[in-house]
Image 1 (cartoon, rainbow, N blue to C red):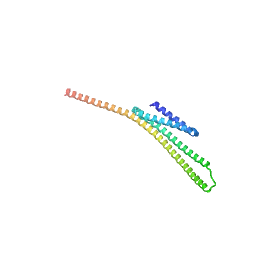
Image 2: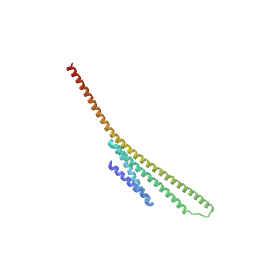
Image 3: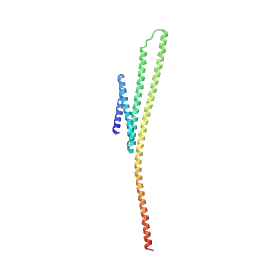
Image 4: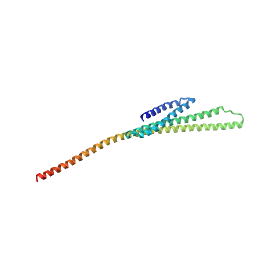
Length: 212
């Protein structure tokens, strides 16, 4: 399990490194970078499925810690998947906007009044579409920001839960030791009491037999 976990964690760091290449990649290579990142993410998800199975086979003393590590890895790769999708949405919107702008610049206008009127109407519709596209991009960016903030909050929550679980585990270990000591002392006290009762009875019998 350790080898598979470290391999998957290494893939996560590699994907994080490749994500920085997306912003600087040109139009010809950006698709290749996206495909490479997606392939690595798919491989990590496949490894996570195997890790979850292996976690269930760990000894009870190690199972909780192993599950926390796998959950953290799953959170990281889900964060990367969301970031990749947000980048793809932004790229699609930019490409559509560039395409519409190019069509507008290459459109031929005539001097005929009716045709000019038709072109003006089309231009107005195009401007409206561009505004709607900008609004959609803004909404998408806002949604992506909210998702990232939510993921960051979840990460903080998971870290806090992990610390509390480890604290509880340490406390339980201490409590078990104390309980064993108490049980041992109770057994000793009971043995002393029974021995004392037997000794007292023997003394009373001897006194009664020889002094009366």
